Length: 422
RNA sequence: GGAGAGAUGGCCGAGUGGUCGAAGGCGCACGCCUGGAAAGUGUGUAAAUGCCGAAAGCGUUUCAUGGGUUCGAAUCCCAUUCUCUCCGCCA
Image (cartoon, rainbow, N blue to C red):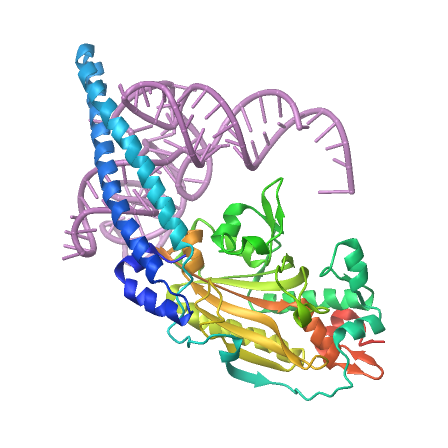
């Protein structure tokens, strides 16, 4: 959520920057400003009236103390009418606050100045690429390989639950577990504190990280208890810091977490959902950092670097994209996507996305820190996948297929306990 | 799931209707003391929001959350959430 002060003080800048995200904010901003003016004038009025009420109440207190009870009655009458006015004004006030809030949450985050305009994923800028992307038509896509070696059973998952909930079997399950452990170990080595977090979150948490209200339909909802299944560990991990004021020396905080992730993926279809490409339940290791504002972009680079290093170690061909305005997410100011090349499908698959949210999440989270002058200010939040399993698994299977079987990347062998799937 | 007790500032803890945003302590910050430190000692120590160009200052709100009673609520009433104890159930 954008801060009202920013909109108030630099409305034109907000409007201009949001154009880069192809978002026309003109109307919303002017509505917000209009409501804001009204809101503040009403707040002033209620404040004054409530101050008056308090003053009279104190006077009555004094009168009772002095035992002059009969003097109290006219004063009581006076407050009665003040109370009535205050009540009406308070209703107006909360109505305006609500209105303002509901408009504010519809505005996306302002993109970083370096973000270039663009309409679609086609306009993203490739800033780095490594690894061998040579391929040929004899290489099988992973959904054929998983069947051939009987390591993932999509039909069985459909029977038990539905499409998008595969069953991993034997070496498939072990490879999955190996990847999780490998990712977590790497993150720990790099200073991320490992946490295990709930997979269901309440409304306040889903709201604070921005899943609500924007992505309501994308989350599974346990209605009886009004809890949401997490679409990513980002939600519970970031909410660790909800409503907190950190000390300056506690920053940056670095957390990593493995979790299953649940996404309804309403509206997806075709080749995008084939096999492991898009699932309703998948595994992911997430990294989250909270930093001082001045450090967040250096941290973003460091996180990007960290993710590409892991991909390199897995020996997967990879490219790094700096997202254009049109492709960057609602909540992000700057995002890098990492894609690995999948040789059986002859296409790039997104396996990670690292983003700087600046204060967009921390505003809602009320996540602040005391700077060295003792002033409280909003921290910046960043996160990234490190990494999401299914597509990594898909490209490991496709890229390492040989006539003898699927070769397990060197770094994973100590975790899997085997070096080939055959 | 049933019965009972509770929720107060960064932490502990006092406060059952009247200048209570809240005693006292711990912690923290700054100062004094000291050759330096400890001890001692003094001062300060919440957040949100509004008035204001900014600061200072002032107002309002906040004692789990949301309602209510009252001229006045941390204190009384109702609902919800959470914690603890006992019973039941259970990996």
